[in-house]
Image 1: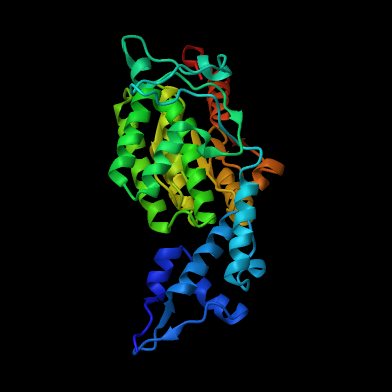
Image 2 (image 1 turned 30 degrees about the vertical axis):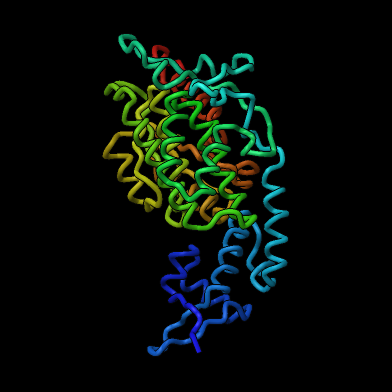
Amino acid sequence: MNRPLMMSIAAVERDTGLSKDTLRVWERRYGFPVPVRDGQGERCYPLDQIERLRVIKRLLDVGHRPGRVVELPMDDLMSLAERSADAQGLGLKVARKRAAPAGNGQAAPATEGRSPLADDLDWPDGLPGQRAAFGAPPDWPESSADPAASPWVAACLERVDAHDPIGLRQRLNHALTTLGLATFITDVTAPLLRAMGEGWLRGRFQVTQEHWVSHQLKHALHTAIHRLPVPAPGQAPRVLLSTFPGEPHGMGLLMVEGWLTMLQAQPLNLGPQTPLWDLVQASQQHQVDVVAIGFTANSPSTMVLDTLADLRAKLPPQVAVWAGGQHPLLQRRPPDGVKVIDSMTGLSEAVQAWRRQAGRPGQDRA
């Protein structure tokens, strides 16, 4: 009799993002998962339980609590995932009438009026062609419940469905070349990430697809950022970017890095999960003006309130602290002395306000 395929607890941790300690606690508290032991007495998990754990992890990521979902059977989990995916799409500004891929490979002109962002980004003198190469700021997006409504995103999702990473890279490069970096961030990267999350919830995409899509997006953003003009030493503000330990998502940091570079600020992206004292030390070493910390919607409340307040207390008052993301606590009661930024428009306004306060009118283009 063939033994069913199993994965070790370490492999399950890597696959699902659920720590070994979490798996053991759930086993004791909820009676799931139910591992078997291998010849060395180590926990191993059958594939059907791993699939269930993946759905549970995604539900946790959109705000559900373990006590409400861990014990649910797979059918109920999938039903809840469908409802959650629908709820995630309501009232979010992710799409608009935008330039779409035309049959001749050129973009059709956008039909919307000029955005408040349209004058917020500018390029230094002596850099002809940079606006054409990297794109003017995007029009402010309309609300849309479906991130895949964009032809650009739909074209990318076709390549994801076909398990075609090279094809996806080609679509992303085409979008970046046609739209420019600013519009690529708002109209391709952000809605594509949300569409992938919703597709995972609905069972359309697998974890591996999410991983290589994330890799291709990072590659595209890195390439575009490195093609931007290098910030001059005197450009300000100098902004340190990171997340706290336990917040591993770094895509938002890349998007902000690109946006700040276009605003002619000086971003220093440390990547995710930088310990508190390392942030304080780096802010001193690099003489930064701002420390900006990113959060996802499911970041622990202690991280959002306590650790963020602790960072504010450990930094000198002249160093601003910005907190980015859509976490509910940031919207309701952020720590004193912390500026909350929940959109690229808000980021542009924050840079503009900092420059006014610092007396840098010559750079007041954000």
